[in-house]
Image 1 (cartoon, rainbow, N blue to C red):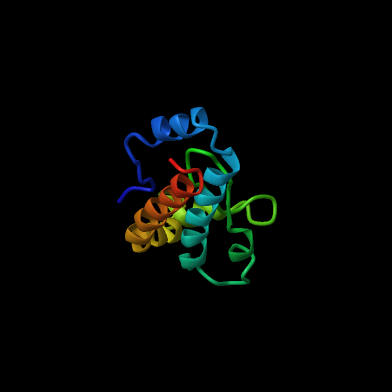
Image 2: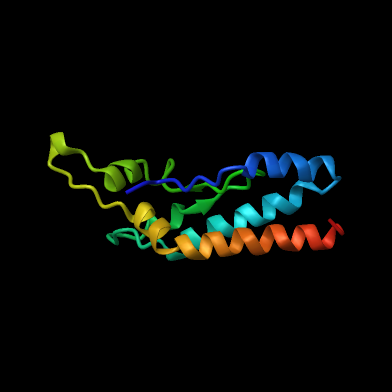
Length: 122
């Protein structure tokens, strides 16, 4: 199972959109929406709900990033990936959400780029 979905040629397409004068914020909005698809589909283990409160999507121009954890939940990585030496089994809640939303992610990317092209008469 992969924690990433790579779209070949996306970086080059974004560069071409930049050269055509498309506002970078448009692609950032598309990538944020894709990240939110995964955030909203994520079901982290529930003890106190603190970990769920740390889920967030980033705003990148060429990639959608989803993060969990931080100062309030520094154990997020251990829960997600496990720690065999301490008997902690992985609970890959982000990877599972990514796989469940895979087709929605591609559809959202296609629609988002199409809307940008249409809005900019490209």
